[in-house]
Length: 414
Image (tube, rainbow, N blue to C red; front, side, top):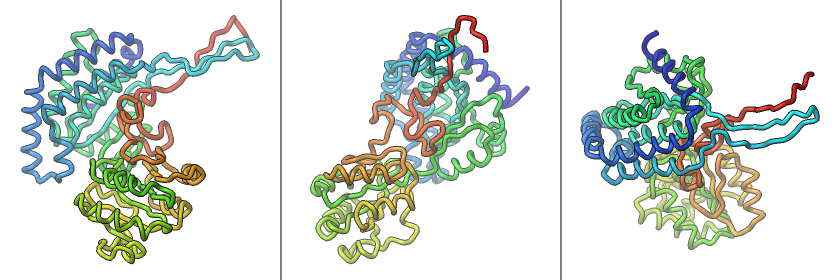
């Protein structure tokens, strides 16, 4: 055996060790890894500087440069995240249900690791630490295919993790970093369905579609985040302005940023001028439909492809809709099943919105930006799934396990 088959085989063997590793040992490793990240901050930043210089020379787009760059504070945040994962409850071995059936058998459902998780991601070196921590704590080994833009930084972080694993007597192939950028070689990894249990691609739509098209391995998909905020006629309009603007501007290149605002026609004359001004003041280019531009002529013209579009920039679409039913129809046509938000004071309208839209997270009276593992109380996440099997929404520790049946009997026969 050679190449990625050998690496995946080693990861499979490591996963069997991790599945039986005690919680306290896993937590000790994560804390030691956090300490090592802090102690090696200069080395990580030096590697990141090399990655940044290469990326700028190749003309990498500004949003990707922002994701690629690390600072002293972001390295410290990586370490903090590792410590937070160490403090989270270990899902492995958790009994989710238990009963005695008519035959007298005692039947339990118990959480167990998935096995080997392959994560494919782009210019986010911090994901190397986050993905390892979550996979490791949930008893899985990880095969990490990071973007070549972050190769130097990811390499340093992965090497630190392997050093800590060895120091604790655990297999270093609990984490394997794949450095090849060749798409044909990536296809080879995606055919290793007897060795890898799950693939999680995290990046642009092109990458995710490539993985989904070529993988023989079950794949968690998240093609894009086309998130909407619907402002209902009963909303607190003054506070709605802040929610809308920050949902777009706080991190415009993230998948949970709002890309489109849907305004109830009953309040459009009153609310739209305020929203348009606030967006303009925040540097956002707002592109409105015909009804919106009749009220605020200064809005840019929204093209047909501006609805259902993930801008990942300080650009947003606006449409006037016929109440909650109109908002639901728009979202079900243009949404990406990521995050949808309604601002309303009417419980019946909120209930109708929630039952009508299909999304991994439906938020009432808050920003779309809260669809995030940490913000939703998972402690951390490895990505957000917009498919319903095997997870829907942010994937934390529990979502990196599955449930099996454990049965105790007294020599029953059937």
